[in-house]
Image 1 (tube, rainbow, N blue to C red):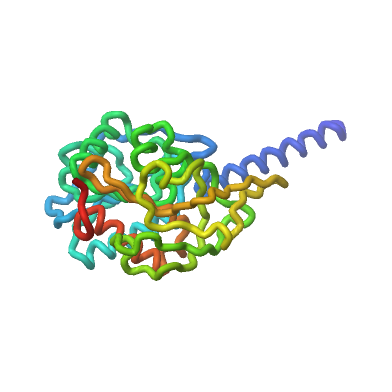
Image 2: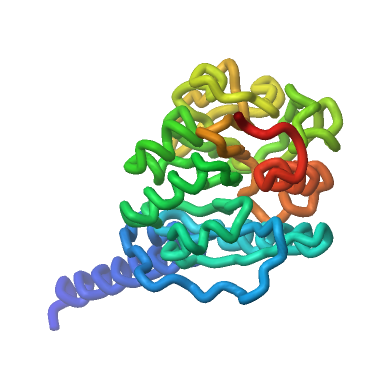
Length: 292
């Protein structure tokens, strides 16, 4: 074997090892489905408990795009603890076939907790839309509002509003000042007028306020660095008006989205815990004003 051939074989081996390490890292950090997005849809519905206290909360965490593994686990644990403490029914699943008329009828609220990607087929999307518009309640957290949902136009327009641009990078997680705009809403009723929160902050093409959503919390863009800095480049993510929690009525249904909740540590703060509890209580019709 010539020296040149040995060198080429060595280089190919290094490249192969590097590629394998890169794919392993993508899997570990939850980015596998960004590289290889899935459109797998569930066909067989899960079995629900025979007895489910009312109101009942359905927590859905399927990810056909980026998976926030730690944030999902921490949030599910918190939502279960809240439900048990308040005497609500609770069911957690990653099976999209639960979105059928009969099973949805058993729930007062559905939480898309860091759900991402194309998770439901057309019939399941239609069942969810019909249920919500008839008086159900929905809460979305963090990646429920990212760019992986753009193919579902009703969801994008009715629940999220603006198109996702990017999240901050360089650094990815930053402390920022969050401002309460509506202290009367159950999601903000136990929050101070403003507070500091460390997050992977999202930006959208336009403010949800401009699309007619009711803004509950916004972020002070002067309190952090609203830029995506990668590979020597920089993208300005400033929105001017930058809501991070908003709500609206969708037919007779209640819908609330919160951009908070990427990592485990977010679910340990008093402010975020109070925000989630109030948001789900409102969506389930336990607290606050309903929708006409």
